[in-house]
Amino acid sequence: VANSLNNLALLRDRMGDIDEATQLHTESLEIRERLGTKTGIFASLSNLAMLAYRREDYSGAKKLHMRCGPIVRELNNKRLLALHLSNLAMVEGELGETDEAQAHLRESFEIRHEIGDKKGMAIALNNMGLVAEKLNNYEIAERMLRESLRIREEIVDRWGLAFCHPQLGRVLAQRGDGAAAEGEYGRAFCEFSSMALHADALKSLAEIAQLRIEQPDAGDSVALVHYIAAHPNCPNELRERLESQLASLNLNHSENAQFNSSATASEICARFGISVE
Image (cartoon, rainbow, N blue to C red; front, side, top):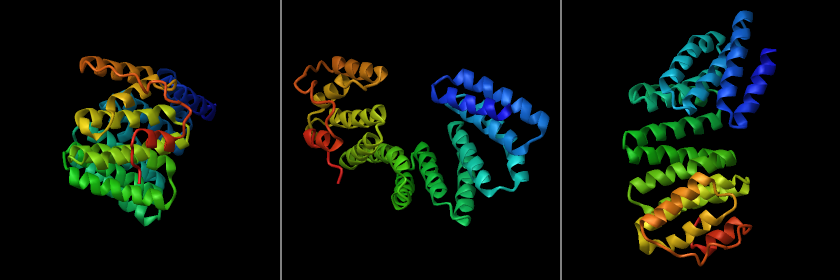
């Protein structure tokens, strides 16, 4: 029963019903605690912590992760321990507890290196980069994210590549390198498009448009914004933000609004002059 509730909770989570998923995970946890199944208790607590994190209840997420700590160390499972430390660190980063976050990320990376978990190493490096970014240590953040990308390319982790490229793009933009930032967002657009994750792909294009609006000589930003907003897969929130931005800048240009939304990622990049080399 506990496993069925857990699986149903994961399904509800994928459907976007966080409240229902939380309730189901809570019910699963109660059963697992009565049975005393340590692995199951750890899984339920971790799932609840991640849901709390996504609701931006960082204090609640940390309390749940702290309950996980003694259990996972008792299980003596290094892979689970590394995952736990990484998740805990991301919550600590949001709470401004950067020293603790960095320490836990280093420990997570060392464990993953010890057991040869390259994907886990890439995740730890990625998270270290995000913590460094929060501290405005953009040089360190760039170095961590580039190493994460290198490992992801080596192991062909396309999902990880898709999400890491825009993170690096954001850091490069903070460092004032708009051209390099645009390249990273362009690569993210291509990766997301190849996996049919159209909303995420369009969000990456929107970041390029934002860079170009801030630097008008970098390309036809208005045409790109109109293309994104007119795309059938553009999330409503993104469309409203883009249209509001155009209105606030008193910009009006619709020449490319109907550009073929079924065009390939390469065709779109070529049309709008986005270099992904």
